[in-house]
Structures are given as C-alpha cells and as structure tokens.
Image (cartoon, rainbow, N blue to C red; front, side, top):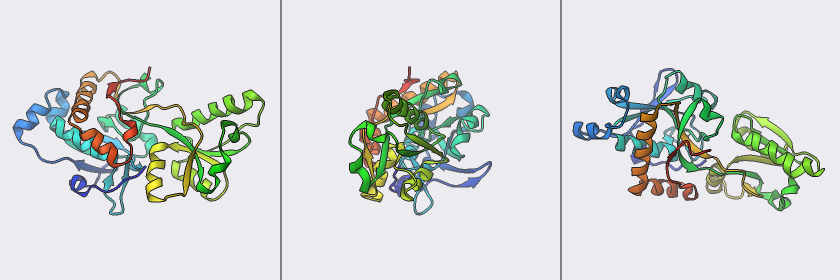
Length: 290
C-alpha cells in the first residue's frame, strides 16, 4: 500500500483513545445538507450524526499513517467522501486487523473498511458493499525477478505470506495445482503475522517469494523503486468491500448508493488514480462475490 499525504482532506482527523485510537473525518455541513444526506441511513446513525468505521492502518496505500502520523490512503479519502454524501461525520476506530470483523458483531463500529476482501465464508455472518477490485500478487526481490518466468518456477521454493489474509489459502491451492498435482516439489509456505513480516523474510533471504496485495506493491514501486518485483500470474481476485452486520440492508443500500454517487461525480476514479490504483475501479455492489 502506498500513501501520499492529502493534508487538506485529512486535516480534520482527530485522534482520541477510547478502546483504541479513533479519528473523525469530514467537514461540517448545514442542517439542511445533513438532513438530506442521512435520509437512507438507519435511525440510530441519523441520531448519532456519525458512522463509526473500523480499520487497521497498516496496509498502504489503502490505509496507513504517514510521516506526520496522520491517517492517509485510499480508504481514508473514500470514507471522507462517503461522509460528505451521507451527511454524517466519519469516526475512524483503529483495531488490529484480526479484530475488525468482531468489532462489527459487537457493535463497537458500524462498518469495517480496511482492505478487507468479500468472501463467501465471510458473507455467512456479514454483508459487504464491494468497491475495489483487489489483485493478489507473488513477488520477490528486484534482483531475483528473472528467476520466475513460468508458474512451475515456484515449485520447491519457499514463500512467506500473512496467515491472516486470503492469500494464505490461495498460495496453498497454487502449490497443489501447479506443483504437487504434477509430481513436482511443493511450494514451502511460511505463514507470518503480517505483510510487513513477509517482506522482511524476503529482505533477509529466508524465503524466495512472498504474496501480498498488488496495491501494496504499487505503493512500494513508488516509495522504494526496484526493491521488489511482481512475478507470474496474479492470484484470483476478490473485491475489497465495506463490511457490516448481516442483514443490515438499510445501511448496505445507503453505503452502496453513496459509493455510486462518488463514482458518478468522478471523485472515486480521481482518488484511485492519485494512488496508482485506477485498475481496481468497479461498479459498487452488495455481496458481489457469488
């Protein structure tokens, strides 16, 4: 992920500590604008005048803290636009990634928007408004990119990947279909605590490859040119979605309609292009993974 600070848009972020770090995003609006914008929202959110959004700011360029420790990234800017369209304040609530889904179920937050993939398994207990076509990639150090020109080049190698992400299961499937099903040595998979830990394994020469979101790699290509290189075919893509409680149809439709307005007015594409992620543009939809 990558993030380049948009000071004008992020200046309204204010951190406080209450069950974690929170920040408020969005400018003030008139009472008339707020009343118009909140028409489709659940009454509890209208009454509160804000939507609480959970995120883990360690996934550049989707969400991270910049050199000034301010929240930055694609999701941060999209959240601000959602708040403007819906006529409510956005309160960002930070949590470790593996606690985000539970924070919706317990009511600590209304939504989660933190580079989280819409999957059929997650749809059993949550609903999604899909808004970005993510792309998982295998990568290695820039110096070793030439070693991986065909899929079977991964067989017998070692790969690091965050065990908390969908990529972990995807690379296990890849090892089976590309390697062991064809009688070739398996791809050794090292689960790590985070994408950053997987990158460290590459840097220290302990593994040959790693797997991470293409969004991260686009960010690193700008901030650390040549250090890493994407190789081979992309992993099966699953869209990022805004996650909410299962069955909260009113909120899902309000978020979808707000995203649609941001797409239609051009702000959505502008934000993606700014961060080098224009390839992931999509039409917002509810539970798009079937």
